[in-house]
Length: 95
Image 1: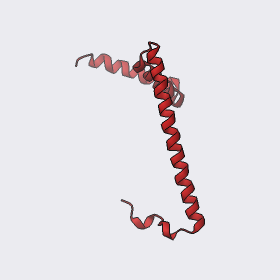
Image 2: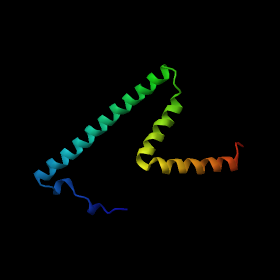
Image 3: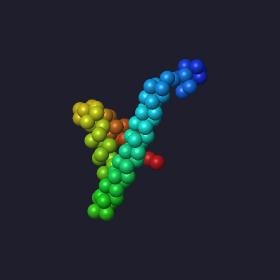
């Protein structure tokens, strides 16, 4: 656990540092608001897809897979999926 004395106390900051702190807080709050608007836009896009008859669960899986592929690379993903297929085959569909 971090000791309280490790953090800057707002009263110990000079005016310039206090202004900088307020800028940081404002910046974070703006980004949080933007994130909320984007989340609403994404939700609306999925609603349009659903209205058009697309399977939203499959669409979410596709989007997540493409995102993962951009980060990790196609070869790594295909290898992971191959291993997963083997594991599923070994375990079977028992539930």
